[in-house]
Image (cartoon, rainbow, N blue to C red; front, side, top):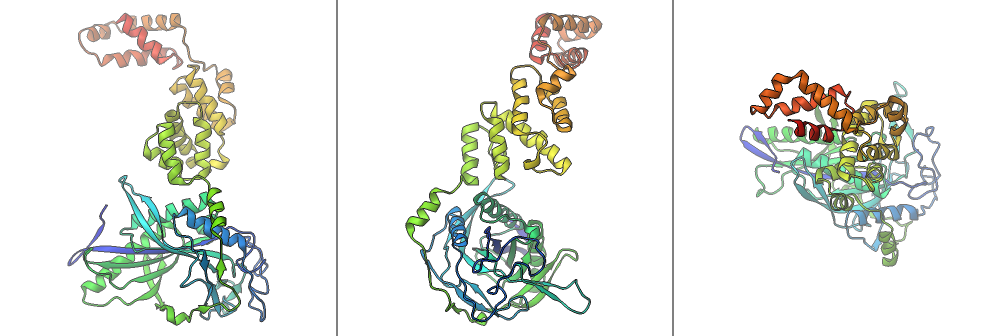
Length: 483
């Protein structure tokens, strides 16, 4: 799906590449044994290594390396059996050592690909350039004192995976779809929790514009630390419009780092963009090259969970549900597991309709997630069983479902308590049909005179007379027989 922005001199194409920083799920930091738990008292999860004390030597955390390799496999990327850690030198108050241990020329993960789905049903492949491991910095706190800033080093040294995309993204929608898909894959793998509001996943957004796809790339600007998918999309749109205005007025876009202010709806200059040589990268003398064996990589690959695209394709094939429904149901591992438990041995399409319709609607209304759903998968399955054996019909099921939400009772108990069992007694239904037709003799004549659409009226009247408990199929059959 092509996406362009209209300027004063015609249309412009957006070119976007994303650098996503994903905090690795591990109990301890990348090069120290300090805890990675979120929300501790300031500076309570800090080792001597994190604090940059002289003479402290980093020791690589194997669990973090394993998480990076598993992520690389999930991104269908090349795993580099030998990689290297470098020092990226810059001075900032929350970086006690004066350098960040990162990977530059020799990352642990090479090229890969992420397939995104767009709102029109089309798919696109977004290339992955690399994934490298690096330390996070600490956090500056400016709101504690009117004259001073404070430093919290709890986050310093926490392992990050920086996942760099190719400049393949061409619209805000594609950028949003890419971050969502990346987050989904990481959560399925259990390598990052994807909580953008806690800062465990954030994006640097590189934006440039050009007049057409045949034109070389123009100067890009990097928007740092965008912490929500919505803000990523907004920042792209706003920054692209800013650059187009500069180019069209005869100016030049400067390569620089910018910040996005969602309240003012603007990007602001932070600093001129550094090049790699400004950071004086060099191999970290305290760390040997990182060497992993292919047999270990193969073992990790065998242990990977079923990933979202594979699960979606299996749902379509195994359960016969539409691609859109399957995509919605695999959005989160917990949702997929819930659906499978409901669908197993039952009408899988009906199960998908109830989960994505009534259940999702109820969860949205009450602000709950699937994990704390008031109706368990087993309970919803029990209600579908009552529909399958004709104990209740679709209309009664809606009433039962609402009662289940409020009380937590099983569908069978609610049907028994409220006397909602569907009437399948043909004698009672025949009597109700005869009564309705007798009271609407004029409409019976009209129907027999060719007004076929009145049949629905008769069905409705019979169902109303029987308080919605009659079996609709038997009602239809009884009416056809008499009419």
